[in-house]
Length: 620
Image 1 (cartoon, rainbow, N blue to C red):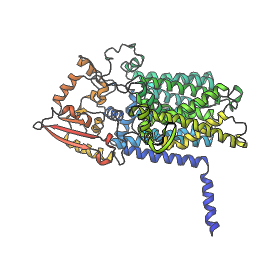
Image 2 (image 1 turned 30 degrees about the vertical axis):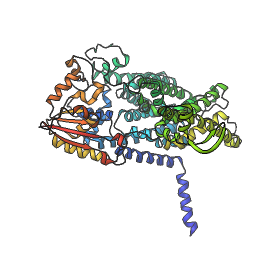
Image 3 (image 1 turned 180 degrees about the vertical axis):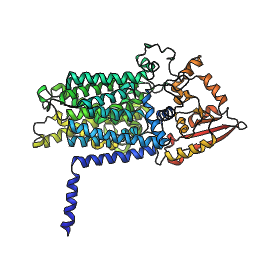
Image 4 (image 1 turned 120 degrees about the vertical axis):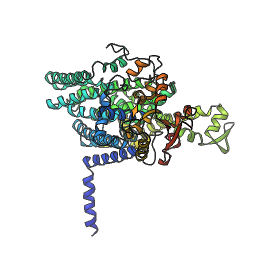
């Protein structure tokens, strides 16, 4: 009887022990997390902008680049997909975020196909799990933003174009998608030259010319639809008004410049290293093991690796520069999500073609990179672990001898070195990180001595072993290291409360009401108030505010200033004010002139520091 029960179970386990089953389990883990994040993550500024603009564009209320409309700070396909889907279902967070999850599932299918083609079934399963265990990345992709759109499009561009003997129609469709990717986010334009050169290299001049012609047609037609106003986006990036779009004022943003110091920038990079460790650090480590000319397993791997490596590191550099030279220095983590798939595929190819005998320079870079990256991971978490580390008990010493009792690390640092608490909290994790990196290399060396004589590891150098061990350990620790620490995530559902408040707001602001917005997430509430009148520049908040006296020129291009704000304030019927902005309005909202309604997500078990509350005032 026991054998009858056990044997089917063993057969079941054997069926599960195949890459397809493991990959499907990874997809399920990803899907469950995406659903949770979709329901528990508070909306952010960008999400509200995409959803409101997209819906109003899809409804024909406004058009991209129209005069006296919205400020077009991104390409128009960043907005339309969200609007089209909401038009098919219903406007609101629920529909948009379910659409984002569907896009994610398409991306995972593409990741499986392309990594299996350029690697094997097991590497494809590993690629799925790299995504499934990265909670921060899933939280980014679970919002209705441009990252999830671009990541999906780019994945399928690679599916259709990477590899040898790609059918002509695959390449053509891939280039159509590449063109649409640029019409979604112009920051991905740097992919195009490398992609075209790769197709020429891998497939010959006929398919290369076909791909270039197809891409050119899509991009040109996409620009002609909104010509010439669309060129203002390129003028902004080039910092030169090459296309005579001088009617659009290009003045400094009136946004507070906070956290622009060197420590803040380094911390931003350390957070990105922690979240993107396997792909970002993995790409650097594996690049150090670049094989010799005769070391490539297949002829298709070399051109693909060159294309993917150049693309990844150019995008990495350009997006790092874009973030660290702006007021949004902590945008690097989100920016790197655009091209995560490029790094995955680059690692998949290189891990099959490791150099068995790396030189001393490569080995030095590998060891140094591991030490710096591990230190960076600890530094990225100083806000979460710094205070705890300072409470660690340390044996007391006097005259170089141990005495009875214990002291905390903070007491020692403060009494002996007079270090300020905030400085200690910041830099003690750095010291622990460096020590843990050294300890990790010692463990790797010990393990290498123990198992390097095994047949499966025969001939592998310590450098190569350290790279592989580091990546495996990073994958195992991903559930801890990639957690979205400090992000606006609640314990209960937030979508339903937004819908409930939106329904209440719709009764307060019936169609035709003029609504004034003040707050980074107030625009989301407009999805639940049909046919109201808004001031379009307010959708972009302080990012579209300018210091200019030419109010009409600003309004024509979706910007605003104090004069425009005050004029609209005196005309508005309903005001939606975020909690953080309320103090500046106290004197304006007199009880004899306004009725007040308050909405808070405190009941949704959100952390106190990210509690979202809205105050609605209706003119009597």
